[in-house]
Length: 316
Image (cartoon, rainbow, N blue to C red; front, side, top):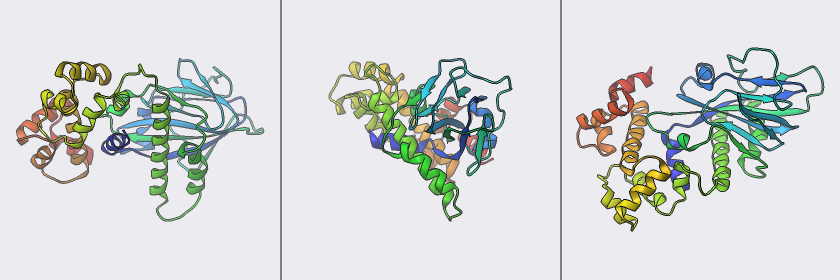
């Protein structure tokens, strides 16, 4: 499970060294626009933004814009994986008569002050993760629009606010890389907490990791995406029938095993196209395509762009 999660996090280019500290005095609120509008200002190289908040002291409320808010206690984290607008406030439903923010506050080590000039008894860290959403991010698709982790206790989720703020206030070499790694570790810790408490009836890629049939199939597809897998071979490897495998995989993950393999191959290829200079034919061969033409057709069918056009767009 851990290896598959790491595999996906590498392939979707997770980054997240953008955050700031907020100190607030009641009454206060923050009403945001969709995260995609902040991409140019926050993490210009990212295709998608996941926003998060970790409460350090005090208490507050948070939730999707137009939805029900949840009460946050110190140590709680709330994430909005799909970049939806949200409302954070000192009291449930409280908002000021003002337009939502169209820009993000200054990056660390800046501090944002909210509310009247009084005792600021609430503090939290706000930040963003950047990642790829296309051509295929199975993790993102399996996460809810709002993710509340309460009482995290130990681990990087509880350590991150203190360590990240302290690191951001230094001027040491490599600080940017350290902060990015800290944010990544914190996000993995959030996913671990979510996995541990995820209901058995939950569906999605994360649920597939712990399934006795789907989990081993996902492992095979990730270990050897270049192999010319068939449903017969996969079912033989996990000692089940083709019908059971096909139905169970589609029910939990949402697509067939063969569709998953195709999309995962193209995600791996897209990352190589964006980061390296290898020839298109070589990249296609590495992920299991016999010819450049076949790879290009599959890539364009899924993304609407040829591999070369994708590389140029990402370079730009």
